[in-house]
Amino acid sequence: MIVTVDINVLLDVFQKREPHYAASAQVVSMVSNGTLAGVFPAHGLTTLYYLVRKHASKPNAETAMDRVLSHFQIGNLDAAGWREARLLPFADFEDAAVATVARSTGSSFIITRNVGDFPASQVPAISPTDFLSQLPAKV
Image (cartoon, rainbow, N blue to C red):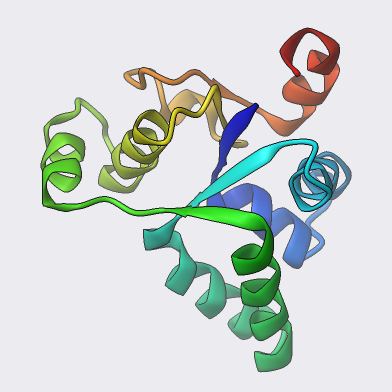
């Protein structure tokens, strides 16, 4: 199964944000061990690096990048994809871009802690906790 993982899930892991760390870490571990095929939107790479470096250190940010680049497919949008995202009825353009990446990569779900930000997505959004609790039915 292919899933698009939103940046907040990765930040939960790399910043050890409680109470979300355990569920998010389990999802990332499933991508790392190949149980899930994970997609991370390319536009989030620089933000992820910046936030991990700001809240931890440059070596931590570099480790985060290495882990994402080693285990996740990077979902890129071309000009047509960005136009598609621009036309979606989302309050936040970044969320529209995540939804467009999810659709274009054939993802079954967007795993995010901000499920309510994706009501217009063609790909359903689900929290890490809910995804894990429904796992036998989903994988």
